[in-house]
Image 1 (cartoon, one colour):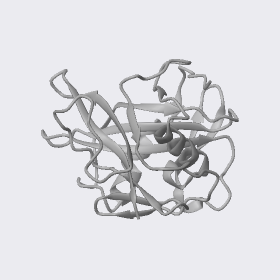
Image 2 (cartoon, helix red, strand yellow; image 1 turned 90 degrees about the vertical axis):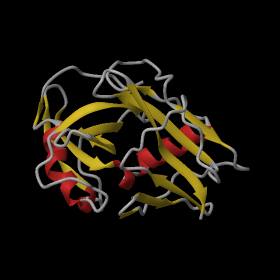
Image 3 (cartoon, helix red, strand yellow; image 1 turned 90 degrees about the horizontal axis):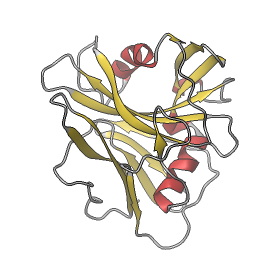
Image 4 (cartoon, helix red, strand yellow; image 1 turned 180 degrees about the vertical axis):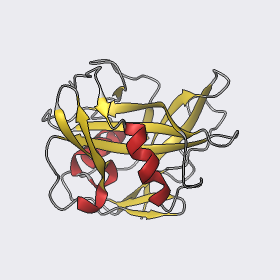
Amino acid sequence: MAVIHHTTLKPTKVELLAGWLPTRPWYRGGPDPVLEKSGGFRLDDPEGEVGIEFMVATDTTDPERTAYLVPLTYRGAPLDGAEHALVGTTEHGVLGTRWVYDGCHDPVLTDELLSLIAGRAQAMAQSVSDTPDHEVTRSHTGSGEIPAGFTPEPADDRDGTRLPVPDGTVLRIHRVLSPVADNPPPAPRGALGHVAGGWPGADDGRLRAVFVTLRPA
C-alpha cells in the first residue's frame, strides 16, 4: 500500500498545474487559473515505486468554477521517452526530487486504471494511507480480460483524452468534469466500463461525475 507523507512540496502540485493546464486543448479557462485541489483518489502501484493520483483540480477564477480531472504519476527518476508528458519536478520533503507526469502517458497508471475498471484494483483515499475510497465506483460489462502492460499513446482533444487499448477498446478520460444528480453516477450509454467519483462543491455539498469511460473503438 502507498504511504501518504504529510510534508512539503516545492513547488506544490497546484502551482505546477497552474502553468501546465493552460497548455492543454481541453482547458476552458484563461491564462492564469486560480486552482484548488478539490478531491480525487489514488491507486497503488503493485511495485511500490510510482505514486498514482487522480486529482480533481478546480479553477476558481469564475464563479461557475470549472473542475478538471488530472491523472498524475510521481516518480523518483525520469520516465524514459516521456519528456513530452512531464508536468514538472518538485522537491518532496521526505522523498526528494519527484518527476510529475501526465499519468495518461505512464504505463503504470494505465495498467492500474484498467485493473480498477475490471475490478482487480481498489481505489484508495487521496490523503490517508491504507484506506479504500468507497465513493469511487466502477463497472465493466465487456467480455474477456482487459489487457495490461502496454505503452500508452493518448491523444488530447477539445473534449478530453482518448487512450486506445490493445483489445480494440478506448479509454476516454473526462478532463472537464460535468456533475450529475445520480449517486453514484451510472455508466454512460454504450460504455463497456466506467469510473466515477465525487468532490466537494462550493456550497459544502458533494458533486459527482463520471471520470473515465471505456468504449468500443
